[in-house]
Length: 319
Length: 306
Image 1 (tube, rainbow over the protein chains, first blue to last red):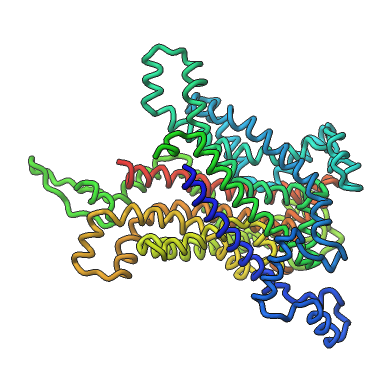
Image 2: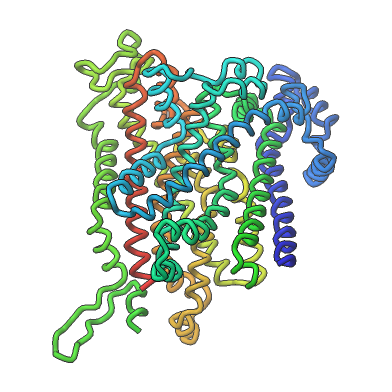
């Protein structure tokens, strides 16, 4: 098992290097010489060229890439020229509340999708299963922002239960404490993320639970005379949740993307808003750093999911 | 032996049973299609798609909504006589916009899915057949690109280059071919140990003939199911792009752009600028998902498990 994990770690590392090359190359293609963007449209070309040269943007691509990686390994994600700040500082400012939103969303999604999926499998093809499956299907087919807008319309505008946007204190200064101390305002954003994730997860949970129900050990357990409740608890749940582990690891990119749109809808000043602003300002160091971070998190998420699956499923360990 | 006959996508010659009856052994595709047609949800899905195609492409011939001349006097008007779904903030008729915007959304969705599936199928088939180092390298590349969150990449590239339908479709297609590649590679790996591949090789077919004439047609069921999901995803992606403001440039627009404009007015209570578009998007995506699910159930069972 250790050799398997080491091999996976090595291939994850290769993939991360590949991601860094790809993202760096892509962003160089699009915004490789920021002299013009920084100095403005009216600056003379000679000044722009001098700026580019002095900041090292005219060196060969490979050298620029190696310098970037070198800086990265020292923990320095680059410098945002548009905002006159280090990218580290910008990310650190927005990351905690984004993590808070995503974390809550993931937590509730797992909490809800798990029993819902099992419920759907156990009560398959009955009315309640059909209702739940249909609801999940519609949510799954809806764009994330439409779901957010619907929630705002129903709960904030019509019923007046929750405020329309992010917590007021958070909108001002993106502080994590502000978000934590105003749970009412967090409900709708978290609900949006949760519902989308639940729709996805419960689909998988349902089919994996259905697969597990068809196995022989379930028949054996029932034949032994085990009460249905114990059959479900002891056998079904344990076996059906294995694909969920992989799914959660694999859903990190989706979480980041959903985060982006949800934060936009609710005006929640996290990494998503930072990304959109950077996009509008053509602030490529920030975009590069965030995309790279997303890629690395995905690879790590996959790796952790692999490890978790290996630990949880003895069949993999012993094969 | 019967399984081989089912899998090959050509109709087998009729087999004469002992009693003298002539029975036609149906090909896998026919069986799959029949099972698909019996699935009521699938029929609903197909009907919805046909409806939207007609609505978006034939609709403008019958209903001339104003989508190009700014008409500020009538802007933000709720549904009234002459404007069945109201107008938006520039005075454009929403129903007319739904039709024209739908054309862009559907076109991008279909084109992107076609590009992604074409590239992905070829990539996966070659990787699966080649095996060894080439397979490893090609799949590592797939892993690398797959690890980057799709929305980020599309936003960054689309913001810079995606100003019309074709470029946006190409961008989405170029970053979406990974999933079909993986699927096809998996299928090819299963297929290449089958007898008919050995037979084709023994008969002397070249590698390319093997890929094009034997492997890809048999892997096609997986590809077809995936295309429907790709169309759904592409439409959602384009809508998200439009909503965030980075989609098509004026005067072309799609459903996402309409939502972006309408959202600002949601607080003012102009529901007709948001919900009709939303319903169109949801119904279209739902229809594609229904078709995809039904196709998967129909084709999978026939061609693989039994």
